[in-house]
Image (cartoon, rainbow over all chains, first blue to last red; front, top):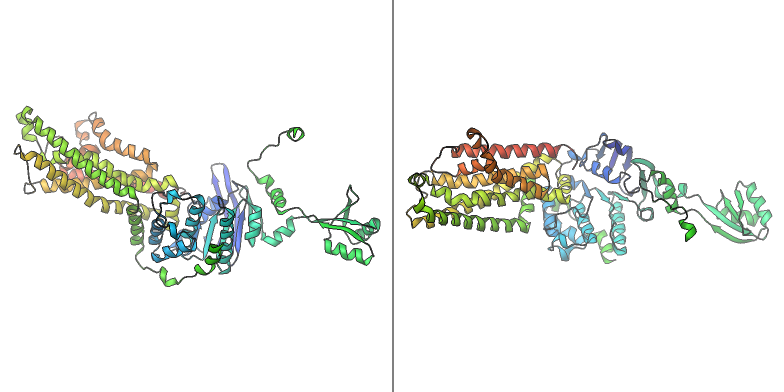
Length: 309
Length: 276
């Protein structure tokens, strides 16, 4: 369990994290979503006691991180897979981590097995690909069998198989009752992995909801309909509270009613439907709309560029 | 796919596997020892420092023997065969070995691994203390061996001119041990400089300037202050025949210890404040 309370981080005049409050609960995967520079990594560093908050506080299992005894046994984290001294072997890297928290050496072999790096355990980390580094970082996070795990952009640089592997790993960790917190800037990835979403933009929380709830709330659904008795259908639907726009090609765009209810309405009036297609703006669009004012760096659309194309 | 399905069962393991009950400071020290010994560069540095120290010491001794006939009576009287055989380790070996101390700190800051270290051990002062302690415990025997071998090689060279001294001579054993102690203190100073400066090249350069450059710059200082310059104190620590303008060996070790403590204190302040 991670609890942030009015957590704030300022660098000079820049506010990186602004009065952020949230709770990450056990037994589910919580996605921490936001554009680059939104404050995700800063928040995670504060959770681990690496950066000191300007104000506010964050607790893990009810305690500030720095007060945890043998913190790796409570919280396992992967912040930056590349932040590792390359001269050591994978096994030796895990060994010093284990030593620092009084974790038995045989656990090193176990976690190397879990992440599938047993065969390269003796190889220097400097020769690893980003994907292998990510796996090693995850092995380090699992070393202390922690109740809480936290990963910053764990799928960056992974191939599709690696992404699937991480997704399954996160879900299985959550199903064991652990608290799983992972950040990403990819909405589609989070929608598939996370049970709960915390969306951050420019250092502020802009959404904190279950993934399904988030999708329902932020994807305005509309339905494209065409019927033999078009005018009758329009009248019937309007009476039931739907909003209707006429499409250019003789179709209607209905909002405020889902396709199932439109079907029922049509049947009760003996109307024959020719077309019934739910439209619904995509999750990616919803996320984009939600965070577009929050993004620090926009690509400027060039005037005339579309014309020329 | 195979790994993905494996994980679900493999994550479970028996909790007793975790429990190794040792005091916390010992765990941190053990982790730092594992870090130091598992870097191949550590052992390369040790071998290189040993070879260069002994070889350079031998070259200096040979050149002294060759110049013996041209020396004045006064020069012959103050000639210190012990110190002469240890110049290789004290000036060049010390810097090479101290670079271990520097890198123990900077390698982690440069790569960002320091965050993993601080996440594993949130008490940063303990991390610094463990690093300095492990470097000291590792460097002292290495430096002592290098010092003893340098001394023995030097005395073989001096035997021809009947200049050689042995451990039976007063002050010789102390000089050889103080040599190792001085090198150890410089290595600890390296840990402190690494924590303050955080870039390998910059911190190592600073160390070289402090040890070697200090002697040259020290010539500009008044005589009373000159003897407190780190490089001059190093030289004083290994003398048997006391000469004017140098501190007594015991005082020199104390002065080097103070420099190491200042570097560590600076690192401690810089590390415990601010973000990692």
